[in-house]
Length: 147
Image (cartoon, rainbow, N blue to C red; front, side, top):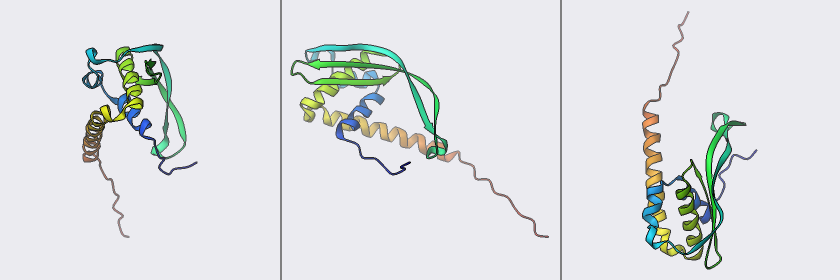
C-alpha cells in the first residue's frame, strides 16, 4: 500500500475540474453558439459507479456505495476525441465537458485560463468548507485524579 502523493498530468487536472464544474460554469466557457462541429461517439448515458473510501482517510479501502454518473465521448472535426464523466444525470453537462476536453487537447491556450479560474474557485470553496468543519472540532480530554 502506498500512501504518498501521486503525480497527475495536466489533462487529469483539467478533467477533474470539468467533472466538478456545474453545467452553468461549463456553458459560460463554451457558449451554445460557439460550439465546434463534433460527432458524438458515445452519447451521454447515465449509469452507476462504486464509490470507495478509506477508513480514517488513509486506512483500508471499503465500498461506500454507488453514485449516479453520466459519461460522454465526442470527436471534433480535427479527429481529437474528448471524454467526460460527471456525477449526476445532466447529459448536456457531460457533453459540454467532453467538448471542452477535446478542445483543450487541440488548443489548450484558448480555454486554459478559464479552467484555471474555475479550479481556483473550486479550491477556495473546498478550503472554506474545510475551515468551517475545523471550527466545529471538539477536543476531548480526561483529567486523572491523583490518589
